[in-house]
Amino acid sequence: MKYNKLFISTACIALILSCKNDDDYTTTPPLNTEVNFQYKTTINLGGEGASEISAFDAISKKIYTVNVESNQISVNNISNLDSPLVEPAIDLSIYGSPNSVAIYNGKLAVAVEANPKQNPGKILVYDTTDDSLLNQYTVGALPDMVTFSKDGKLIISANEGEPNDDYTIDPLGTVSIIDLSDDSVTTLDFAAFNSQEATLKTKGLRVFGPGASLAQDVEPEYIAVSEDSNTAWVSLQENNGVAKVNLTTKTIEAIYPLGYKDHNIVGNEMDASDKDGVTMLKNWPVLGMYQPDAITAANIGGTEYIFSANEGDSRDYDGFSEELRVDDLILDETLYPVINDYQNVINLGRLKTTSTLGDTDNDGDVDQIYSYGARSFSVWSGNGALLYDSGNSIATKTLSETPARFNDEDGRSDDKGAEPEAVEILNIGNERYILFVGLERNDQVMVYDVTNPTAPKFMDILSHMGDEAPEGLLVIPADDSPNGKDLLVVSNEDSGTVSFYENIQ
Image 1 (cartoon, rainbow, N blue to C red):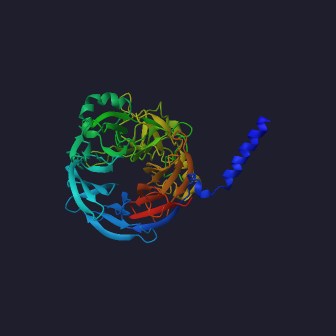
Image 2 (spheres, rainbow, N blue to C red; image 1 turned 30 degrees about the vertical axis):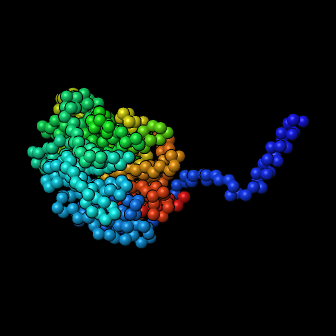
């Protein structure tokens, strides 16, 4: 009987509650984490070089885009995405050439290289309310990327320090930290790691410029910042490494060599020739250097992960070039038997390789062939450990779903394939994480669900006719978006266009 009384009592309470006015009770609606990005619109900014990197100001609803063609920052108001409005550009002709932009809470930071670019560069800061110049800071040579810390207290720039074309001047690669609380600038170099060069090289770091110390040779490319703003990671693309920077002590803590990807194992197949008349993925006795361009960080489930676009890059100057093709090499015939005809152009002969690696026993022939980039994206720990690599996913998905775009219609198979250039992550309520990977040569953006960072799931391939060479990706969360929807912004370098995709769920 007690059970029945309890049952009746509970049922009555439920009935009473169900009859109450709904306004008396508030519940939080479930978060919609569905993802379905569709093309929305395009802004045309000019020709080649007119659209490289973009940043969005949630206050003014303006998009700022690096326009190298016009040596300015193009400005467009996207309050109404159906009719973006052109606003006066920011002229940079008296300062130098722009490379990157970033925005935090009404402040626009612009990375500007000097002329010549081996001289110290500048970070210019503007007020997005009226685009007036607030301040300028001197940083290292060739600031190639700029970003704010997540708390907005710091501006960090990756200063590539590229040599001149004769390779007679090779400035230090550096990282600059601008503290906005007192406008101080701390520029960090890598001189402390010169003594570790031999050890780092055995682990896969490349130091190979003629006569260059490690500090001269490293070329900081891109920056990712931790959620707590205490740490930054900096990709060293040509060097095949990542540096870890302590933003609290303003010191470089470590350099992590990234090692190599084995294209001779299942799952890492690639198309190595643009002259074989077919698009076919095969295993080859080749090691790929990861050499990430863009990187981004995301804290997922309390752990910081680094995501990299493994584009690859070589040095090719009048004063020094490392570029060779496999058919130019003298191969060790024990490791690369003549009967396998590796140097035929339909096999590995056309593959671009380097003169700086491969002769492991110093006997004058090549014992190991290396290629530029890994033709993939990767997930790394905060201490440089490889947690996941997408293997041949980019190649297999583009070949099966968009065969006409595969490796830029097969013309880049001998080089770096689709060239994953950019990465960006959309965090939907800390519940779902979507990774976008821009493919420079395929004119496409790959979409993956990385909610489980060590087991990404392919979702989609985005593209829009007329867009060529996505250089920069930007996500605008729904809370900041002018139309209340998650947006993906793609800046396309060769076509000079900025295209918008919206999550229509």
